[in-house]
Amino acid sequence: FSPVGKMFRAVVRLSTSGVRSLARIRPCYSAPLASRCYSHAKVETDEEFDARWVTYFSKPDIDAWELKKGMNTLIGYDLVPEAKILDSALRACRRLNDLASAIRILEAVKDKSGPHKDIYPYLIQELQPTLIELGISTPEDLGMDKL
Amino acid sequence: MLTSRALVRGLKSGFWRPLSSTSSVQAAHGKDMSPDVLDPSVQQYNNRLDTPLSDVPFVRNLNSEQRQLKEKEKGPWTKLTKEEKIALYRLTHELTYPEMRRGSSEWKTVLGGVFIFLGFSGMLVWWQRIFVFGEVPHTLSDEWVEKQTQRMIDMRINPVGGFAYHWDYVKKQWK
Image (cartoon, each protein chain N blue to C red):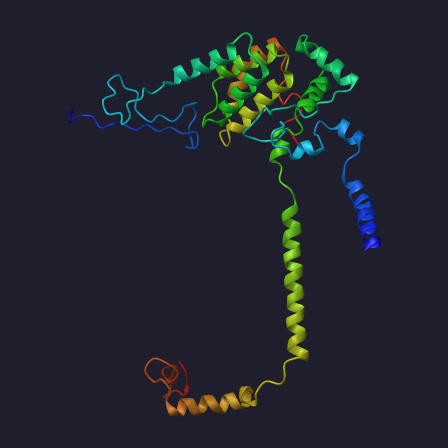
């Protein structure tokens, strides 16, 4: 028994106002000595999560169903995906010759940011090299962000 | 008996025909208007904010122009014009996210309808007041109420916390 150290529950949600970083729910403080986790399951770190999804979309022979399933699942989570995951997904769209899905992904990510209006411009800025390379226009370029 | 059966059959073909879509409408839209639409085992297109990529594209039956565009999509996307990109998007998706989020003006219709019916009810109540109800009892006339109030004051009705309490017997007025 360690008398010192209460478990510090750092729950960072998108819904918290003023959150600028792309953080997620952390059920346990990911300290090296995770001595007071209430479940014996290993908690996935943010980096592991990102890496997993980047790998998923990087599959060279990814098929359309897998892309759809991946994207729909990712959008279902309580987070906005990191730029590297989106980059991987956009490249998957390119492999599948699916421009519409690429634009849709950008729209979905903007919608997912909700009231945090600064996330989307940041992501576009990060993805700019990819967008230019692949020739993907943003919804704003195509005038589709207006009604 | 025979005439009614013929009538029903006539009604069926005459009435339901315009409701079912013609084949040309079906071909233009990706959405199947056939009984498929009611069949949950067949994949459908949906516009959902939480499902960015739908199971099937919106337009499934492409005409030759659209097929050509799809071929061009296989090449570098830098060669596509803005209109072509928009066209490709619209082939796969019916509504953009802003379009999905757009509200309607239905609330104005609803509120207007509510007010109309409230007004109509008010009209009925008013008419009833004038034409149905008889005269009000004479004990509610101003004259009677004056005399009644004076009597209540003289009787000292509820002198502690009620009626007569509020009358100032010295100054002969309400407090």
